[in-house]
Amino acid sequence: MSIGHTLLGLLESGPRHGYDLKRAFDGKFGHDRPLHYGQVYSTMARLLKHGLVEVEGIEPGGGPERKRYAITEAGITDVEKWLAQPEKPEPYLQNTLYTKVVLALLTGRSAAGLLDTQRSEHLRLMRELTERKRHGDLADQLVCDHALFHLEADLRWLELTAARLDLLAAEVAE
Image 1 (cartoon, helix red, strand yellow):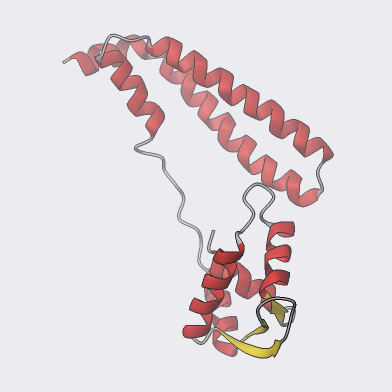
Image 2 (cartoon, helix red, strand yellow):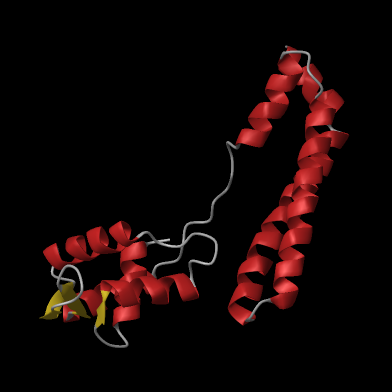
């Protein structure tokens, strides 16, 4: 996720302080990984440097002065371009799990056991996400669905790999 573009998009509804941007980001997108304040302010400094935001006002606060950021026309254009670009699908051609299976086979360890352990972990996480989805709002449901679909694909791969383990063992032994 592009944090800069997300913060710019949040600014399109009106100027905000860094604290307000963090709260809006965390409320909409950061359920599992909230932003750190330092990340917000360093991102805003970069966006300011590139002319994508401007400081609309500075207010005294209990601590440091509070800057109110507003998106510029260049920032709006940048968000429009970012939203129009499709995300590159991740093909997962080199993933850690495949590497572990091959290394288990090469070193005489149980690749079947590794796959079983991974399957259990996937199923545990799927149960957790399904429960979260039941109690979440629509945004949380959609995020959980996305994760669940990826986990389902991983489970299919685990089953297929388990079924082909003897063939893979023979191939990697060559």
